[in-house]
Amino acid sequence: MVEPNGLMHQPDPHGAGDFRPGRRPLPLVVTTEASRALDQDREVAAMSRDALLAGIDRLRHDRRAVILAHNYQIPDIQDLADLVGDSLELSREAARTDASVIAFCGVHFMAETAAILCPDKRVLIPDAEAGCSLAASVTVDELRRWRGENPDAVVVAYVNTSAAVKAEADICCTSANAVEIIKSIPAGRDVLFLPDSFLGLFGERMAGRPVRLWLGECHVHAGITTQAVQQLLDRYPDAHLLLHPESGCINAYLSTLAQADPPDERTQILGTGGMVRHVATCITPVHIIGTEVGLLHRLRKLAPTKQFVALKEDAVCEYMKAITLPKLYRCLRDLVYEVTVPDDIAHRARQAVDRMLAVQ
Ligand code: 13P
Ligand code: SF4
Image (cartoon, rainbow, N blue to C red):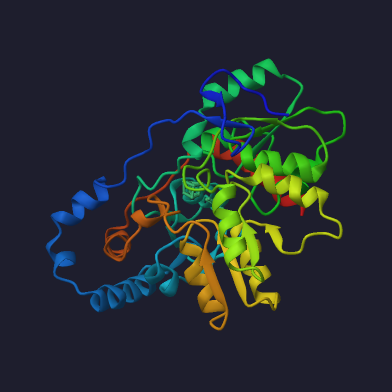
């Protein structure tokens, strides 16, 4: 069930989803405070790539830091990280690590989640303005208003939300567990799902119960269309299609999957961690990858003899790409930018995250 909330949403006449939200201004990452600081930084300006790599290695030991990198990070960052993973894997590693400093190479909400889970650790992000268009698509005031209109509903917040929004939710989910989380909610309770309408729709169909959707979207995934998918399926008839549930064409594939008999093993809707696991175990030699293109580096390293085709070559998250070697070096050298969450918000947001972790 899609619920237009009157804030920003219009029906989508193009069939990419049930509705396509109107656009909000995207956070700018071209000239951030971190990039301006680097313009003035003579030490970093004089460093070659090799010198930066060596410097990061030295600093991570001096600082007793662990470097966590999301699957969409640039290849250099993935290659030097202590762990590369999806949002859930990185949160879990953050909660487990005994390092004193976590250098989080990802976007701001992910570093906030690490800060919520590790109040005794110093969580750093190399560029504090590495945001997320999806997380920016819902504010605390909007969620309070929505909840106020549905006082008995259970609020499920995708982890791609600010800590302040998580603090207003009952339970969190990731792309890897959204279906399980929705299924875990007692029958008879209304479910409000935010902010990604495509992931929410996927959850609704797979869990088999109605869900009210906040009509937010990720500007990178919302542009993945059925036309692009069909063209590549025609060009690579033996390929498997791996599609992220934030994709704008998800509606069309949910119907295809639901009607397929026998089940369609060729089309898989998976978060980035699920895509990695699928590739690791499946013998199909060609995969079409429907998500941000950074994941292809990880997949090619994992399965160098297989062919990976980007479903949309310009599916590039500029927030993820705002994290660079010079910024990571400066982050470890100067211990910037520290990500903190006020105690009250952290406490309430943690309850929502812990409820999610308890479901598995
Ligand atoms: P995953 O949790 O699947 O890695 O997704 C995070 C994300 O930001 C998708 O755009
Ligand atoms: Fe956010 Fe989309 Fe970037 Fe993921 S790809 S971090 S959802 S803007």
